[in-house]
Amino acid sequence: MHSELFAAEHMAQPAAAPGMTVQNAKSIKYTVQGECFARQGSMVAFRGDLQFEKQGQGVGKFLKRAVTGEGLALMAVRGQGEVWFAHEAANCFIVDLAPGDGLTVNGRNILCFDPTLSYEISVVKGAGMTGGGLFNSVFTGHGKLGIICEGNPIVIPVSQHSPVYVDTDAVVGWSDRLQTSLHRSQSLGSMLRGGSGEAVQLMLSGEGFVIVRPSEAKPEKTGN
Image (cartoon, rainbow, N blue to C red; front, side, top):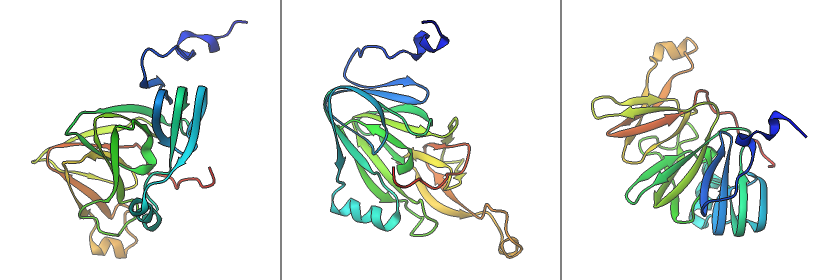
């Protein structure tokens, strides 16, 4: 049987080492030898002796997620084998965090992560309880984090002299040492005339970077 389908770039290769690797632009392969964590429903294939279990988030994190609608619906993957993760053909990227690093990521952009990482659902400082989508997950520790993005992400450097303003529905994440606040870029008169659709943004200042997607977020599908 012959087809471009069977080209080398489409074929799954034997794992060289445990852990997370990019299978292709739309999926991540995780070679499990013990445990990893992933977005619920993100498994598209696996081989080996693996079990998938819904993962509790602890009382505090559960309550935050219930109130805000944010956070991570997680599953634990345990055993020995290989598993492929993907979500709606979104682009996949791996971030390797070193000790002392921290990354704030919107829950909708998490695909999978190493058990050596820890996360906390946190309100975005300066944003209060307004606007929705302002409760993100802060990842720290030493390990790899798989994130997803619809379209090609835009990574924008942030400096003390050049803050960046982002749409809260487009932001994927940012380095956790940045300071955040809400910024109003529309005058009251413009709002009374119907507005531009760009009334309030998240302002990030300090030294670091911010990741945005090339479109505003769509509501998450339910029932997956």
